[in-house]
Image (tube, rainbow, N blue to C red; front, top):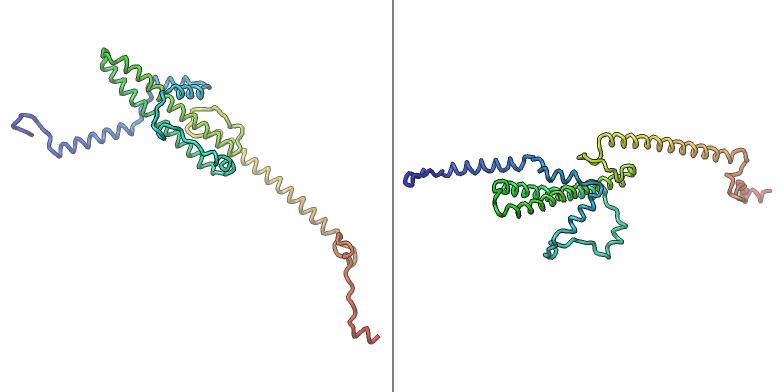
Length: 256
């Protein structure tokens, strides 16, 4: 406490306690989950089957900036394309990477939503400010950016699901538009798929056993073909089918 100025000033220990409390509150606010603003949520729900076209239109209408590699889309060198088409990648690694990329887009949506809410608070606290209209227009753009981030991420989730379905030959689930699921497939879908796999396994086992039985029968019939033919070997050897006669020893022939 500073008695000379008549004002109370916190000492070092009090300052550290205040900073610790502030850091705790800040971390709690970051860990908490907040509902999306109604405008952003409504915009996401209003996206129909043509959401991909709407997202492309939003991306196309954005102001273009130039800063070299930072603003340009990457591309594959043409010389590598044909070779890459012949390579085989682990499907799981590719699909997991798609999910990670989608989460990055969600981070963009969250950041835009946070700024949208902060500007909204400024507008509400200063309704008669001359900058209110300009800020209101900015919040509209931020809402669109948030919608773009969340919707693009969801589209990437759908693409990942299609990759899973194609890799595992689950053709009936390709381009399946079922939504509101965190996992790629619902519990009901997983149960149905597992049952299909079980039935396919039984069918393959039955077919494999039948083939094995047929091969055994053919082998047994083949063994019986050479029986009852005297000294001959198996048929199919031509003039070599008769067992050669042993020649008499030379000294035995001279005695006769």
